[in-house]
Amino acid sequence: MATSNSQPSDPKPMKIVVCVKQIPDVAETKFDTEKRVLVREGVRNILNPFDRRSIAEAVRIKSLGGGEVVAMTMGPPQAEEALLECLAVGADRAVHLVDRSFAGADTLATARALAVALRREGFDLIVCGKYSVDAETGQVGPEVAELLGVPHVTGVCKLDLETRPGYLTAERETDEGFETVECRLPALITAAERLIKPVKIKEPDIEAVRGRGVERVTALDLSTDSSLFGHAGSPTRVADIISLEKSRDVEFITGDADQMAEALLDRLCERGLFGGWGEAEERAVASFDRGADPIEGRGVLAVAEISGEELRGVSFELLGKGAELARTLGGEIVSLLIGYDVSGYARELAARGADRVYLIEGERFADFNPLYYASALVEAIELLRPYAVLIPSTASGRDYAPRVAARLGLGLTADCVGLDLNELHELVQFKPAFGGQIVATILSATWPQMATVRPGIFDKPAPDWSRSCPVERIDVNVPADDRYRVVARTQEAARASTEMDDAEIVVCVGMGIGGPENLREVEPLARSLGAAIGATRRVVDKGWVARQQQIGITGRAISPRLYIGVGVRGVFNHTIGIQRSGTIVAINTDPQAEIFQTADYGLVIDFNEIMPALTAAIEQRKARLVGLACD
Figure (cartoon, rainbow, N blue to C red):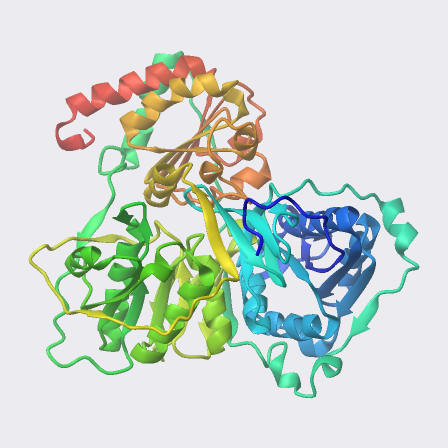
């Protein structure tokens, strides 16, 4: 058998199916607050940006070893335009799942239709985009893989099909850095932004392929049971849409550097600076006193996660919110931790509010493997039968949770920024979409109700170290599976990643700082504020900071109380990631920079002048103001 040290073999012809989606251009989409609908009139439909990379990579692979590239989409008749773009890039065939019965599909119903079509088509490799930038779930790819019974690798930024026959070797993005994974074919991958540059296609290129046939597939072609697809087959539904657009009227602060710094701090103090910003907020959660035995089937299961040697903060946030939900339901809040040797973390989970801690341990779980983790969580759910399951919306959580949902036929809402219970005790899940312009309230028709939750949204319970709870191990039957194996790991930015999760204040650098050597001018300000450092895409592409610190449509969406943009131009693809910030400060030498249209306060000044002045002013106030409270 070939090993990772084998000589590369000649690439073999492959059949690659690329699943793509046509979406409205997020930058042009607006929300009608009166009608509570998205305004699509006059908005261009485009091929999802991540899918442009998927089709480019598939064509590249074919150019090396031959084979066939098939583009596939599900959508209304106009979605054929997305397939024509794929043909223009170099796809050999295009397949369009088009039928009224497909309308209203959520991620699971979409995955179900695609999986049936893919099984019918046949494949060696399926390539999807990492997510679609309108809905931002990233669930369809892993759900398709689960329904087809093949392994998957998400967030692929490098792909090699030559090292080991019958396997792919992929470098994938994680929250901490990168992993190199060997995955047996057939398989599914999702393409990250940096996998390959998309091919630029112009209108004449599309017109040149318009005469080529697009194969149309109806629901009846896939199954006589139309209830599997579309709205009828969807376990989740959108109950309401709420606009989150904030109207910010920028106030420009003038004067010299010292005057600007003092004036800005005056305004920030009025908004709460030094009243706790920069310190992780924790509120005490009393031990769960029900006064009666907990009601069976009404518990909330909060999945915990480890980063490095510590529990991630989102583990505690889910316990805090889960305890609140469990009290209303009359059940327990229980914590589940999966890993190699994790019993030492149980005490802190109890101190943070867990009524019971369950551990799934073993060598299988030493490295993250979505196949193993999904199987473990499925067994835990079937054993414990909780009312709701909350999973961190981290790179790992978003990787295995969709497989769990697909295997159990459950609804799953991704990247929630709020959770509540309605009068029927349904879990109301608040999910941002269209770059944070709107929040959709999602309800699920299946139990347990299941959601991934964005880090940094809920308060962390303060630890009560006198508190204890039962700790139980769950023995799971997860057989060895060599289809997916981690062969290398690079922890490039583990601390930066977790800091960004919890940040109350973020200082973000753009190309306006000039070069990586000028980060040292910004770092003292970040330290003084207790802030995390973020960056724009171009800064990350230049290698000045780690990818895990990128903010924007293809990076992170953040919601700090204070965001300070230093030398940030403010294009839509970046500002889409900061819309949920409480206060936005922009520092730029160009008074016409787009960032000022998004800001509360603007300083038109060179960052080299304002950074020392602002840092010094903050330090002086911290020294002067007792208890870090504003005058």
